[in-house]
Image (cartoon, rainbow, N blue to C red; front, side, top):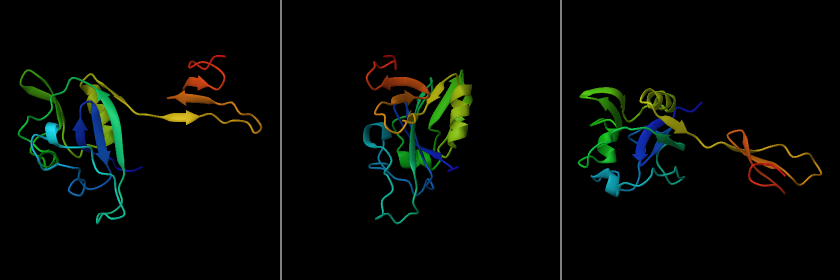
Amino acid sequence: MNNFKLCYIRDSFAFFTTAELKDQWGDSWNNAPYRHNAEDPNEWSECSDVPKYEIKKIAYDAYLDRPGDRYSVEMINAGAVAWLVYASSLDPKVVIPAGTTLEDFKRLIKEAGGKTYEESITTTEIPEGTSSGMLTFNGSPVYSEGGDYEGRN
């Protein structure tokens, strides 16, 4: 399994990379405030001088604090502050810094009382000679050719 590490937060989306954090970049990642300047992480390109890497984006739903306006993505990824913090009173209960693995991110979001969401869309096997199939989202039928969106005819 690839070692995806947290490299960027936008709204309720977390972006993970398999690159070293120092090698991962996006437009305006050196400008503060990141919320008003930074764009999503750049995809790897053959023109790049860093080893090939992958980006993964997942949604999350949790009440967490993000860094203030004086920070850039570059500063956050260098460890100046954490990407997300869940605090009750003044004692941080959950801290999610840059470089947190995808697995740890999911666990920490859950510890903060939140949820994570990953897209998993598949189509079922279609027997040879037939033209209908069923589209599923996370294992639940959402569309069947010739039927409605609940997969019922």
